[in-house]
Image 1 (cartoon, rainbow, N blue to C red):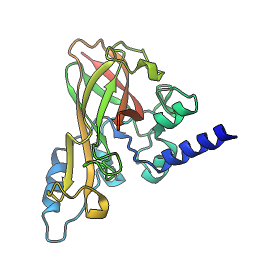
Image 2 (spheres, one colour):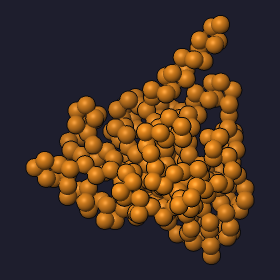
Image 3 (tube, rainbow, N blue to C red):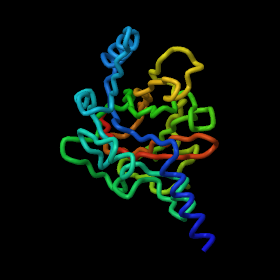
Length: 234
């Protein structure tokens, strides 16, 4: 009975905890950043959220099983994959059940990129870009891949240095305002709708479908993941 209660408690805590997921795997934020920066300086700032359906045209690649346009309310419950909570219950899969095969939904194709090029991953700051609700440090995001076409990462045990492609701070490419670093949470007025990670693909990548896992880690643990594919060409 104690184990059942502990498991239920862990799942409840996980559902209420900080979370984020990849909304796009190839996002052009050149104009978006200009709008966000300009609107944030208005007498009455206007918040622009890159994850909203109105801006879906800036995305050229989507994760596995991702809707376009997305529904963030639904996805925050049914799309995110909580690594900590599921590991507690004996589940060590790297991906959400809907992302365990290379499937794309209609109107949401996977990214296309050349070996050696850069793709920009986009995810929501969700109020955590300055460390709120995650122990004061927003942590980092890491992308893992096996580096071979048609080779998938399926288990947490494969989050290794050998499979690590790139790691960056969760907020390394975040746009948040106001500029005052002491404003750390939404209750204090923080707006942090746009977070990106510029992912450099190796020049020697063999053409074909490559599978990747994006992982957000904070408080010393891998917390959330999203799985995606990229069709790599020469």
